Amino acid sequence: MSSIPRQSEDRDLRAEHDRLAARLSTRHSVDEVRRGAWGLFALVVTGGAAARLGYDRWGPHHPQAFDGPSIFFSLALLAALACAAFAAVAVVRARRHMRVEDADFARLRELRALLGIDR
Image (tube, rainbow, N blue to C red):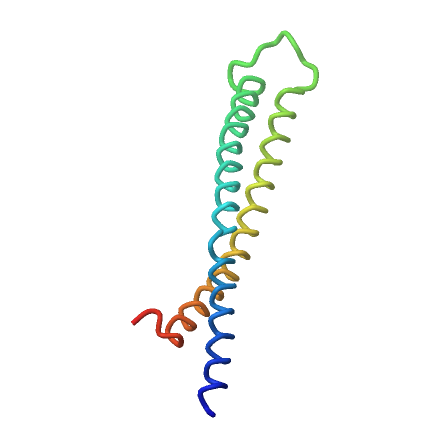
């Protein structure tokens, strides 16, 4: 009589194990870290372009031909700030996904030990 509740409990644990394994098969935090890395790369490129344009405009050897607004510097600076914001959001989202995935992985390991899968 006590084996029937045990089998039912094992089935429930196995179903939870399978759901967690399926959910952990795709790590969304890795995708977010990849997006953040691309954002950081774009930040380096656009920030470097903005720095160079600023140096050319206001550096020690700036040209005297044009005294108007530095539109290209402003655009490059805005692009760099947008890339920085994109990278920061991606990192925050990756950290949030990592916390959930770490908790799910700990539960998965616990279930594997209870079910006797990893001995």
